[in-house]
Length: 153
Image (cartoon, rainbow, N blue to C red):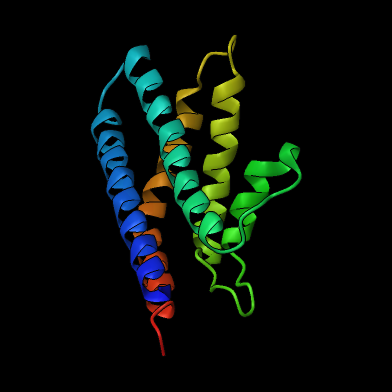
């Protein structure tokens, strides 16, 4: 039964990684555009990227440790949990580098969701894109390391 559960976890993670890669492709495409519409579309995709990573974190958290009690700090707490190994339960999902880049993306997502009356600053969006593209270099290795450590010994 445990092997079946791990197979389901792996399949769920792989499916979510495909969604994440689709969003990365959209970011690559939109960052070449110009004008307000492209900037807003790019910001929306950055928002979606963090949401897709957060869905990945929920898959892992639901499988292993489940609940986060403090709803006010839910997003920050869920991300933080992914960088820590839980002795006897699971290895860390994220490296420190990925964690920092994702925390920057989380902060942008929060701003984007609540910035109803603000204009997007192209320079700030460009910095977030830069962090997102750096993240693309690291996160797959993190996930592969995580999955490898789950293999039965």
